[in-house]
Image (tube, rainbow, N blue to C red):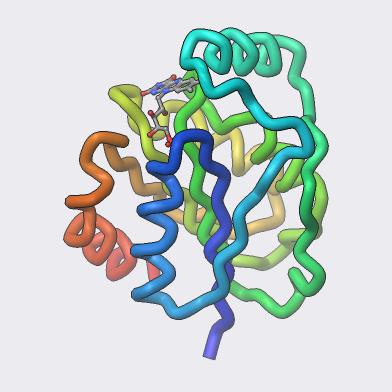
Length: 157
Ligand SMILES: Cc1cc2nc3c(=O)[nH]c(=O)nc-3n(C[C@H](O)[C@H](O)[C@H](O)COP(=O)(O)O)c2cc1C
């Protein structure tokens, strides 16, 4: 039996909804990637901060660590689309562990730009991992995403 970690970053909760649905199906462990500094709640403030972090390629410090990453064979990685790629915290996460040979299942929630360059950016960050086809779900549709999730899991696993 392959062991599954469902890990995600969220700012306003959409990505968490999808992560929980995926974890219900795969029966893995859930892990929320959290930054030490909270992002502003106000939309225009977080949008500006995220843009600056992308431009400067910042790696925000993370609050929590996975103790036993070697135990997992499959890692589901969820994130909101931020400026056409993953939030910079995802890259901090990817650079914090050795993902060689592990299967990565990326998914995002978004409001129009779907996965954009995020899956390619993940592949570049962890070239020795097996990064599968990603899933994109609109933030406004997360509560209605069960069928999309099932179809994707059947396809990639
Ligand atoms: C900083 C920031 C940047 C965003 N950039 C994009 C984007 O480039 N493309 C897009 O479709 N949606 C973008 N969005 C919308 C979010 O991806 C979308 O609302 C997502 O579902 C939020 O997930 P969360 O609730 O898990 O934080 C952005 C939102 C924020 C806050």
